[in-house]
Image (cartoon, rainbow, N blue to C red):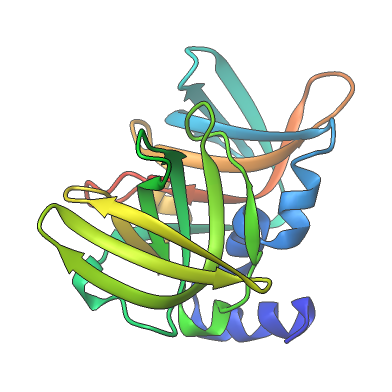
Length: 212
């Protein structure tokens, strides 16, 4: 499925396709290497017109201009026990002392988003973290968590998912959810004058913080 068809399918499901494309697609992963790409994580301080103000996790204030036609989406909790072979997931992880990878979070993609941003790349959730978007080949429960084997681009990777690791999936949201105090992740572009613009926002609702 090409990117245009993927966007159309996701929009049909009402899950904020543009947000998903902007956050986790291969195109966005490439953009992350560009000087003008910026990922803002933090808490909303206010929303005025098309300007979203965010207190970033670094403690600074970021004013983000939302582009015409911007989209908003959210995440909801999901059950790791429900992950099965053939599912498509995005897992942020860190290297572990035993040489493997330990998950920081797991995003379960809706079926229509399978293939989005497939691959493994550096991620800025924590220092030295990576993001793997891949198909689940096997999911086994162990005494102290789960071990998920994923495949991508002809490669295989095993990622341990400790008990308590956030597991979420995408869900619809509205502009009304962009209220002061709500946690957000915004993937945007920074102009030469320092201003930030974005086409999509992912906001935490119902007590669920976007863990990506």
